[in-house]
Image (cartoon, rainbow, N blue to C red; front, side):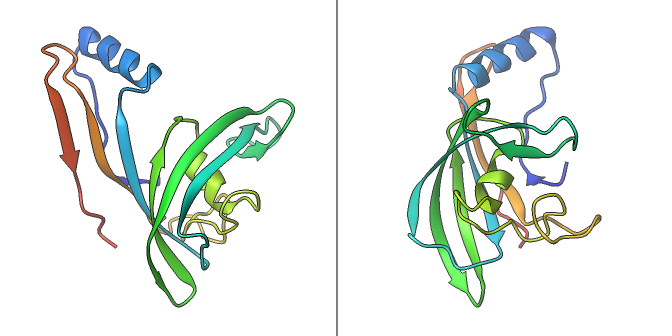
Length: 154
């Protein structure tokens, strides 16, 4: 809900099924632009962290080496200014809060996404600087490859 940018919505059951299968089989390609509160190094890499829901603190997700499911994200630094870094994220898996956790956790980037009120220092109502920048998938009925792009407003 706090993320701006692109999303896909199916209008029929057939389309919903087709899109669900593509997400499940990792045929949908997505990128996100974010601003994190800190200087990120190295300039590119892969974050792999196992995490799961914290049932005592929903919807918070927690790092868990034993019972967590692996989340994987590629990242590239786009720009560094002052104490913030603009990043391009490419999620390989699509877990709840994956990018937010991968940013904030010390075993990830170690810096929360700016404005994140759950994993960072943002307050309720702050704009979280996380934007779905590109989305690519096959049309669920005719199979045509579709590609959409939306420039971040920040």
